[in-house]
Image 1 (tube, rainbow, N blue to C red):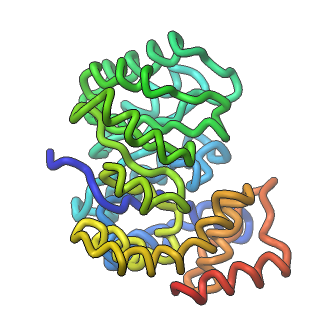
Image 2 (cartoon, rainbow, N blue to C red):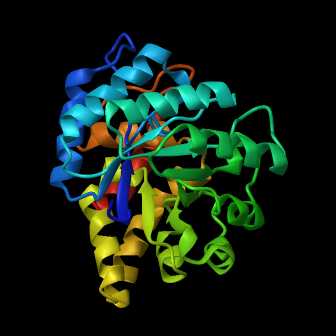
Length: 292
């Protein structure tokens, strides 16, 4: 399998007015993202509101995504759960459905320690045969997976990637120094991409790509080509949106509102999340005007 790199869009899950899955909108969104040039698709991640989906809905989103992508780009599936048993269940389902890999955030709410996290990921890795991207998101999971722990996990077969959403640009260098080529780092925040790429990250798991995928891909390609001045100019224009997403705690709400503003509605977030207030929508429109 070719090594993952580039912009991987972590997809929103479209809902209809009654909060049921909008399968037509999901298929259209997948085609739009691929046409805009994203290098990979991730379904049922945090941005996809996986924790608010039923088992049946999660599996349905997996099936639709793999069917609609049709091998055009790699498909990763978010298979996290709060127990190892259920994480294995979702992971095996994704593999059997034809996923290219998995993205797995640490068990949330229960706050496992380093020993427990190691055994959790090791057990999941041993239950499947496709690559795993560890998702380190201490804000939502409540635990921070240290570079030392990631170095231990890099020795486990199938664990080859990490999405770091700490927002700490020092992490990229720390992980690369300890893991070398055994662990590829993907940026997990929308307001530190350029800094992390310059430090050696190889990709970006991007929420912004739901609304401005072509700009996200452009920033990545400018960086890869070494056109840093042009990359910096584009990055500065993208930062107001990235800061809104990562600093205000309304990631899904802003992205779904942004998609609607740009004429590609994906429905509202599933409650308890609510659409942004009018004054926040105005700020969002201004941020999108800089890059859309």
